[in-house]
Length: 297
Image (tube, rainbow, N blue to C red; front, side, top):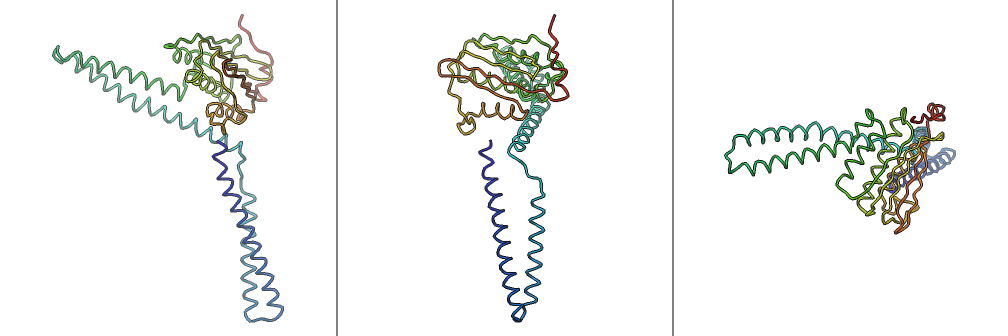
């Protein structure tokens, strides 16, 4: 993502240099005008006043531009992640509210039609009803992935368990979700980041790792929320800079953890599986409460 921002920074630098060049030319012109005025050249006073006015305007513009708000790369990354989440929520609403309602109406119409068709057309109509049911289920699944509404109502652990059940139900992967402590009071941005990182890790595992076992562990530590994701798949060679290496999934994980000031560690080798450790630090207001974790009895 940062690589995409380099042209923006280069344009900003070139504009700044251009302003300096214009300012230098105006100073030179002002010096020449002063010299001409001293030597009583014709129109020298008018040229001198014009140069002074131009220099004043440029100076004010430069002063205001320095006082303008300048986004740092981390601020830009945070903003882009926020825009991405907002766009996901918008797409989820459109899928659920608009396309979902249209598919539901088509399903009801096909069922009404099936009850009135002759027997020789019942098979085709039943196939149509099954296709509409599958499409509606897929739309609801995609909507839930884009916007995990259950995070607010069910909490992080239950939402992850529901996601793993749904994602891995038709695979050969044996998985486990370990959480020995209550996760009440987790900030929303932390829960969303942990959910998205797990979601991305599971997707990468299914696409590339060919793993047979998956282990996810959540721990409430005094310093923050710990997330561990481990599989026994093919593994890979983690890049120092995932964005430059084209590892978009890993780059997205790193951006999310950086946004919250946490740490991300990826341990993997070809043929030896992958382990991802993420630590989300507590906010100052939640730090005292987190130091005394409540354990299930």
